[in-house]
Image 1 (cartoon, helix red, strand yellow):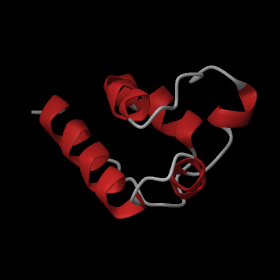
Image 2 (cartoon, one colour):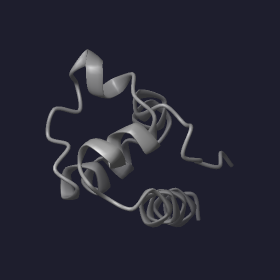
Image 3 (cartoon, one colour):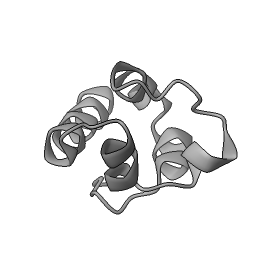
Length: 69
């Protein structure tokens, strides 16, 4: 199982775990296919959207773990 960190690239997350897309949409990241958003880290996405990076990382890892069961 992969573990997401604040340094993981958003596009990589979406490629390996597309079920996480709703978590990004919830923080206002609506252009998930845009080259800029796909190439930024989770930390960068949180900074742009004024979200807590630790909360999002936790949520993403929980979503991936739940989907792999």
